[in-house]
Length: 497
Image (tube, rainbow, N blue to C red; front, side, top):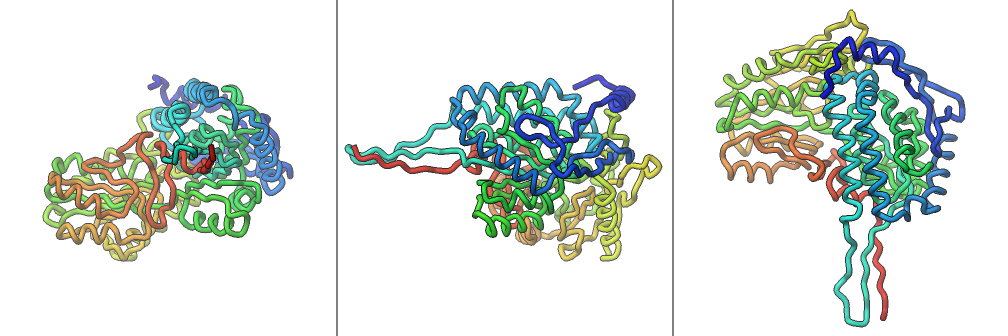
């Protein structure tokens, strides 16, 4: 962890060189049209730069380049051990430029600098390194055959991958996609969110410095309805990977069907239940985890524990504990290392969160903490972590993904009711269970329709655990060796001897 102070970070921000152009075949370049869009910092409303606004013409250029690079074999047919060495070097460069990348992330997206540095940058480097290390440890298969036949089952890179990533963890989500895509030999075109494109643009140059050949990793900043749509409809993109909203995920599936039936892998929204039973082993720890689960990253987390389900026999005791715990999560200047709640990503998102807080009032929920915009004088977009009690699953704040620091508390009487409420959602990304009963932990965990279930904690796991959702939270998995499935095709080769 760095010893830099807020004054140090603010001084660095003044002198930071920010690259805002697209990146194709190893070089930064303006959009073909010359168009740009403003990149505004949510920290204080300052203009960070004019970012290249790519469209159909840029998509054509980048896909053509990615295809030619893939077919050349300069990366796709490089010996696995050599790809591994390059990727580990890439991870090292991300770490070496960690303070620069963390500053870009905080200025661009509004998250606390301490989180950008210790979580986002370090986890991004780890994702690249872990995937690189796995390259020469994954074996193909030999089928059980007669003595005069040989059956081979091999994995081959899919080809050209388009990756559309979200604005809440821009660098980390990029590396979750980049790691296995690069490890398996593909060429990748990244479309970062227009709300936070800067770290994706920057690491493209680091990839070249690491030894990844030009054309293997291209970056096209721009809007979803322009360059994002162009990539999704492109007839020469083999696989599309996406993290973002369920609404856009559905549209991308339509585009795949309208074009070349490209493989589409989606990690979409969530409305995750955090279930606290009366026999939880440590109510104080559960309360602190409940606060963290909604306040961390300003609640802009797909797995945010936005529905807190509490057994009614302890509800009157437990909710005040959560209200007390949320006091430790206070919005502050993201460049201050002591800050743990930063700014929401932009004015649009802030107003959306405030509209949901108003909906909570309108639907009869009882506000017990937060609920207001703060620090308005800074020019930034800050909202207090907010808790509503007396919520039922029919209310908008309990049904819809807010993507902000708004917690809905819902009571339940028994295990069956807890499971029913938890599963009463179109989403299925994550869930948590707090109980001392081993059988209950397993039974409830099995019953929950979610891709990740955490017991007596919230947000557990590392690169070895697959990440993704059930139902309208998406398909496929990031992280772990299961992520490699998204970037490879299986081939059966049957040989008569």
